[in-house]
Image (cartoon, rainbow, N blue to C red; front, side, top):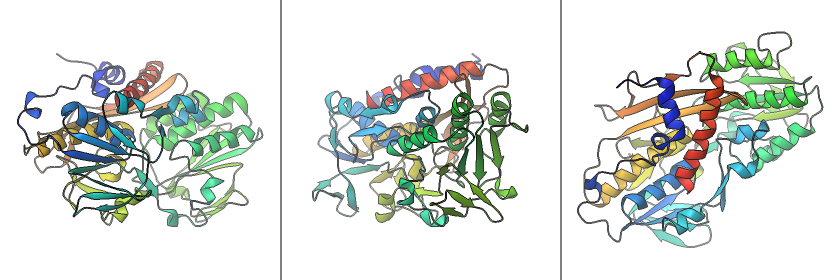
Length: 433
């Protein structure tokens, strides 16, 4: 039976296909013995780690799972741009781990992992304790290559936010936007590839433009980009044209690609000035998003290669450097899967199946993954890109031909906005409830 792309995406956003609530669990996963008494440690409680912890327990309740996450509450990056646009508040995108403990029997430890001993299969904590594991799942997210932009570092980010880790950084940027005078200039310095959430900087620009249009209409937003193209570019620019006058003299948004001197090389934090190769730009509100790499614990544990990311066996997401350690989410090398929350959730479920099978001495099944990246250009103007992926004969992630695509240009962008909201509510329920 054929199904339209829009209907398929609606199913992804609103039901079990997106969240895994309708996940089919084959009987063979539970068959046999060998996992009873096993202990899996999961590092990182975001879209990847929290999902992996929950689904390992769902697949085999005899496996003890300990989730280590430094924060008691998790504020999602998906949805954080909506906060900047005034469509949500931080509370609505902040979640606890209470249900993972009470409903799924996961032990949650709020601490920081300082060292991983892959040989003895043990993690050491900042508090001074240590935890042994039979298998380790890591979802450490991203950290920044501060050295790539002169004058910008973690200390400066306390004044000039990157807001690429949601929470206090989101609140700081929102505060600065509200305090800016009408007629001010917002500058977003977009990062080079690869980085977390490829459409993210451009959804952020859209949401800030929406806020400015409603509250500070004399203001401008400038995107200085370290790239010459970006995800869903045609759909974004079409929406910018319809909503914000893009391409006209009165456009709220201006985009400057790398080829036209868009790459930011230096930041003057005191004067909120950014410098490119040939020019300089003054901002009232400055958002600098640096180049990225795998989370720091992945580097200290020796799990990264020269790219700064973690190579893995795509069938199981087990590290190709250290056996017994699986790396999922943004930190892993999994292209063409994007570094998105949805992809991390999908990878986590594949990893959970593999971990449970391997603990039983069984061969993991052949995986597939799904991803949809939603973006809001305006409150009632949504766009998306979707794709299904499979394991190729070479053991790599590959795109399933004909399985995906972008939002049709049929004017039904309000529906896509509704699907985006539905997707968010369903996926966070799948992860944290």
